[in-house]
Amino acid sequence: MAKKDYTILIISQQAAKVKKFILSPLTLKIGAAVLGILIVVSAFMVYNYITFQKKVTELQALRAETNSQQEEIRSFMEKITLLEEQLDKLKEMEKQVAKDLKEISELKKNKKAPPKATKQKTSLVKKEEIKENLSFRKEEVSVLDKERNRLVSRMHQDLLELHKEFSQKEQSFKELKEFLQAQKSILLATPSLWPVLGHITSGFGDTRLSSSSGGTRPHMGIDISAPSGTPVVAPADGVVSFAGRESEYGRLICLDHGHGYSTMFGHLKDLFVQTGDKVKRGQTIGTVGTSGKSTGPHLHYEVRINGNPVNPARYLNQSS
Image (tube, rainbow, N blue to C red):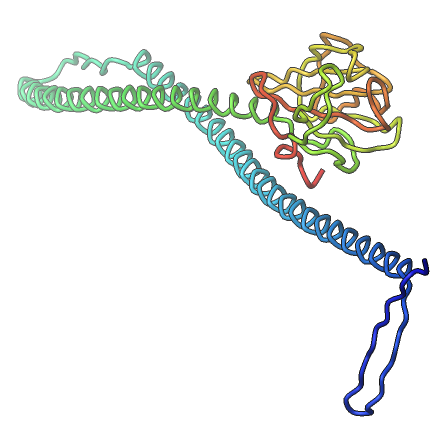
């Protein structure tokens, strides 16, 4: 039995012409398949474009948030420096007050008694005049002594009040300095550097297959792609709590930064630190590799607060 062909007629109203196309069933099937492929590819491209735009928007928001945090940190550090300068001035004032108190104390010790009148042989008239003058001078000296003692006592009292006020201010400044030192310690413990220069290939919370259970689980950190051997640095001051091998992450380094902050670095090639070592912000601790269950050279990076994973992208300094 012969296969049936399909005829498509196209009629032009102006030229009154008819164009005829004869299509076989095979041609129609090929055309439908091509059209279906085009629709699927177009839908996939639209989906990828929407996803890309969403990630770009999220990245811009993260950059804006990070810049705002860096500006706050910069302003806070300037205030810390200014307060430290004021504290130095306050200490100089304390030294000056102590010096003044010492000088007044020495002046009080070196205070001399008024000179006594010498007896001379004179006439009776002159003796009477001398007695009157001495009596007047004694009264004048007595008034001056009383006034001087009152002024010295008042000055001493004022200095004691000033010293008391200064001591209170010094204690307040001491407490403030301790608070600022604690805040500075928190800032130094906050991971704020890129541990390695590269591109984020897997974000925080992305779903992935679990090698142990066979199901899916959320990604607890981010993956940063970089060539094998690229240096990995500490994002903040801390102590190495673990440096060795682990079944999933291969060569692994864990840092404890204090104040509840900790970080993890997986799939490393080289380890330059040992458990118990103290590290500084920006210090090289290892290199990027493919150890453990890894499909290519990259760094698995985690940030935890009190043991709970958080998005490391919020702590990446965009200017680093």
